Length: 302
Ligand code: NDP
Image 1 (tube, rainbow, N blue to C red):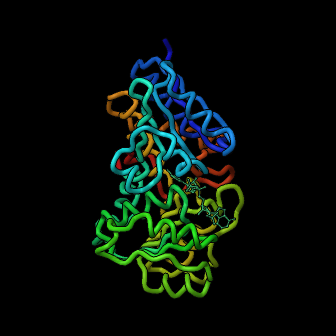
Image 2: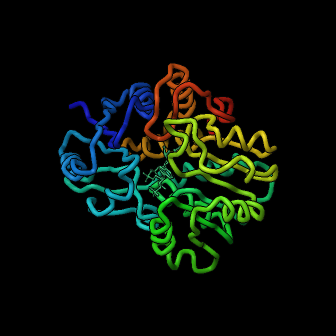
């Protein structure tokens, strides 16, 4: 029986994940299809229940459902439990297991961004959704000592901080209200800036004014394109990267969870590049029209 793997989001558009996952299944002779389901919050629980059927290998969960799925699964891995966010599901019989492969994906992207420099200790994170939770956990476990989270709705950032609780007891993790002046003063004492909002995903907007950026920053935008934020940051002299490497590595880790096999990284990278060049969009952050920044196929193993 052909197995099914589903990407569930709202919207899911034309997914880059589909291009890379289907090519990976085919290249290893795995009889599976990668499908996209656009499910609104109202229809989401029913869709998750359907995944318990025998024909499903598992699923990816994306914007805006990564937190919503948590109470709907039977077991969470440590990373999914600690973050309170799930981006990958596997099935054991009728039981669904929730994983978070955004965490290792983010860490690969951060390592590449930092390069040979010493890992910084201070970061500003914009956004407090499912993606931001993986980012914050990745930063905590990489030894960051001060992480400030800004979010349009402050209560969500406060909920994120509260959620991490004892995992952040040894360091300073704070939610702050979204004001340009506060963001600017925090950025002045920070090396790492991560955009985990969806601002810039479908429009050419930027979450923060260009004047708040400075040349010592390392800026990672989880969106898989050369967003206005990245263009402004590069103009200010900062080092920048988009979400391409994170997308590749979260997908590779998910592939291994579904199939038990190592992911064909070079092929997946090539398929991502091809799909992007063809103008497809990703539920994880690719936007048409503007080429991706800084993440290339020349070292897909990250
Ligand atoms: P969620 O829906 O869980 O969170 C969305 C976030 O964006 C929230 O912080 C939300 O703020 C903020 N936001 C959305 N619109 C606006 C706006 N107009 N003004 C201010 N803030 C806004 O999504 P995810 O966390 O899953 O994804 C966030 C982004 O990260 C997406 O662009 C996604 O594509 C990308 N991503 C990329 C990955 C990769 O592999 N490269 C992996 C994971 C995510 P509020 O809470 O106030 O609504």
